[in-house]
Length: 280
Image 1 (cartoon, rainbow, N blue to C red):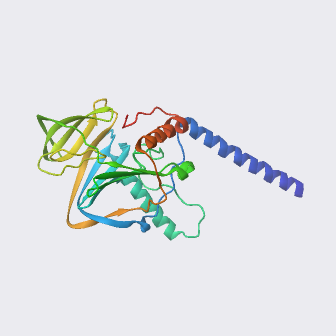
Image 2 (image 1 turned 120 degrees about the horizontal axis):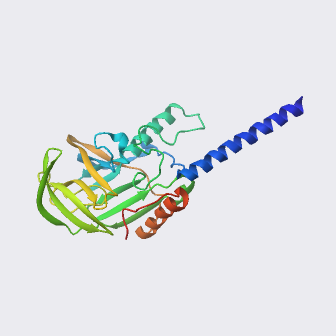
Image 3 (image 1 turned 90 degrees about the vertical axis):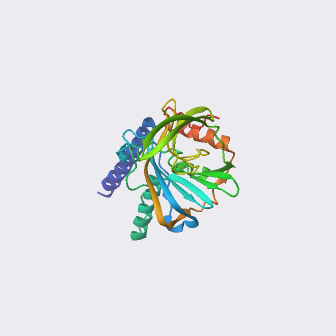
């Protein structure tokens, strides 16, 4: 009887391992890799405060439906720094932190919770990177959170705030109720068309775009591989804090080497076609 029970147990364990391995293989074929661990939002520190927050839909199928976005980005503009990051990931981190606080003794913990757009389990540097602009140093730093099995390769890279050489045109159109003017530039291998709000005299925009005489509300490359479009602008009567995770453990790396490694993740591990936002 004891032998039968042990044999049955071994068979069950073997079957479980087989199922897990099959599932992992299926995920690899589908181009899915394990997402990074969540970060503890309770451990964030305040580095500045902001009076304006801008929300951008990233690669949206329908601008009115966040479930069709690849990601939902936020730009917070302070006096000393500006922060650009994924709301989907920040919200997930917040929910995971709350879950862990309510279940402190549970070994199994969620990696992601809450809405995640049309491809919530897909790792991308545009989801799992945060960008901080330091105005005094005229620098921008990217902190890139790698997939779970590459977490020892979490990286950071700093560069001088890149300059786009804009050509401004007379074309105008309304976006978010603001009269916007057209501009074009060629930046790191791609040509872009942007629309900036002349009535919002802030030279920021999504991602690394900057330098126009108004806030960029919409921008896309001419091949329509990447698009950022403003869907909401929050202006606060009282400033809100700009917060930052502790990134001291993130390894410093050259920008081009980081781009190369991110490409390798997509092509080698995810096995899906990849078109980098930066080609050079």
